[in-house]
Picture 1 (spheres, rainbow, N blue to C red):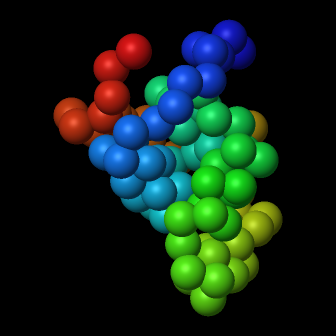
Picture 2: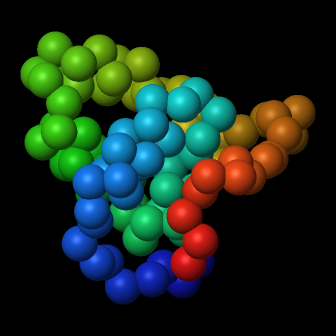
Length: 88
């Protein structure tokens, strides 16, 4: 997968990445395609932007969750693109 060069994110992009990271059905790969952030970078962003307790809750929630990784997803999980996502 070819990712765009990592560019600084503005406040709206950071907010959208956080929103996507919290969504159960949005895999990390989608965040990587739209924003150029791989999973470790998303984790680092979440650690910086969230309160400690919120980050801990998020990590517990997504750790091992198959829907957060495209390769582990069931084919039953539908793919959709929200209308408000960033266009490259």
